[in-house]
Length: 383
Image 1 (cartoon, rainbow, N blue to C red):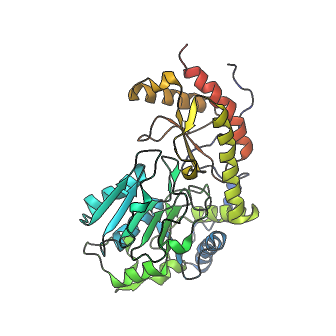
Image 2 (image 1 turned 180 degrees about the vertical axis):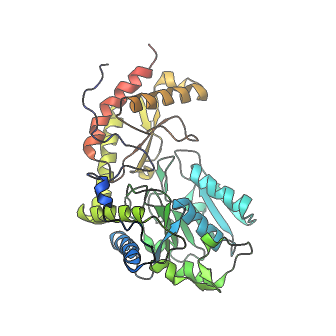
Image 3 (image 1 turned 90 degrees about the horizontal axis):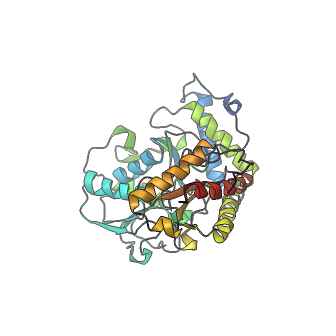
């Protein structure tokens, strides 16, 4: 087939760091408090703005606490695992690489023994009915490397005895989370908000705070993970006093993206943008014989990290190494043509494509990408 002539205006479809909000330029950072202490009055006020706007847009309950923490979403999850686990048994869910990473931490680093692992292959969810809410439960809300999400919060018990700990980095600001059913939620600015890396966000429920004050883990606690002092919850961390020094450039950028989020309608507007992008891809997949979603059940299909696999008979007949080579060649073609940057599948996932469709991606760009996907696949198809 002939090469398309119209390219996406923004070819950035990376699943992290993700596309900046439409219209972003470095001028958005001109008021950043560079060269100022984050503990100065204006510095702390700027941090508090990020916390307050995040709380308002997401609709956090008034008694939930929110903080900026080190080391991106990974740091926020690690902080929760090291600070909260060990008081009771743990169920850990994994259906892609990041869930597997939390299993490794819990079993091999924290060395907990009362652990149940509930796994599923890429494209599927574990059996959520097998989760025991007498135990702490660790899971990803949206599996970024599989494009598979939990469909809702109905499976989370209202009368749970354990804590619900959700790594929600590619879900927050794009999906409607049932906050009252969640005790720990983590994310980073670099996903749905299109922000910069290195900073994580941590939300704790009153139940999580009660755990912090009633339970002391037996292992040494690094300074970056300490949420208590002398057995008491460090409230100041959740009032703008960060554990370590944040980048005020990144804080300014996060604030800019939150202001944009308000302008597009808050959480409902952000969700509509992401779901609209997914709908465009769904219509294309429906009429395209060589491609399918990695997520088997449409109810678990992510609207942010959309993962696609190739179903053409010639491709399915290849061994894994050959499939991997074809998929990499296709993503390289898209990259060279500057139509879809960083759209390759995650290294542990089945060969295919991963296209970020979060709220900062314009629907027009998704539409303009589709003919290029058809063209690129035609280029890698054997004659």
